[in-house]
Length: 158
Image (cartoon, rainbow, N blue to C red; front, side):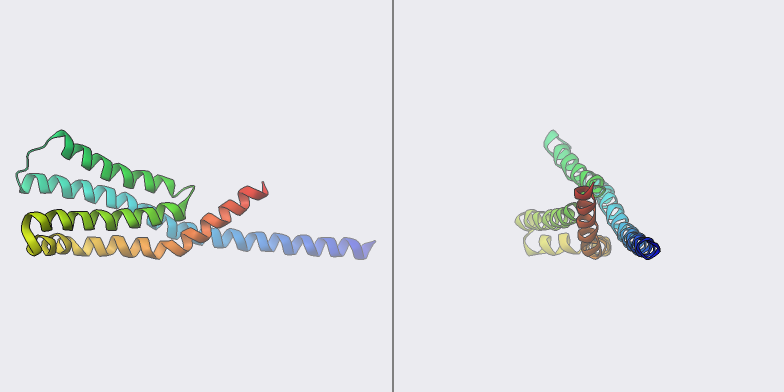
């Protein structure tokens, strides 16, 4: 009897230890994903600021379509940032794709209006900010995937 109790206690201790290790790993992943969430929020804010500056510097006429495009862009990044709480991998990858897509669309639009000079100007303007956003999102992909898988496993076990 004592031997059975000792074996059960040892198994319980090992299981507890394994759970603690999983929690520590999840906390580390959550820190990286938090950075990605912040990068998505910053992206939304910087896009809004950039669009407002572009309107004033280029003396563009503000109309419903322009405001709608800005609201959709900014709203998408805010929604993705909020989605990182439940689906971090999906949100980070979607944010990365959306950010790159917006940059490419802007390059095409300015390329159409100003030729190759417009493309280069669009891609090079704010390059440091763009690189920082991309690096933060790329760095978070692996941890976000691991964290999402762990959350899904925990949800299945409940």
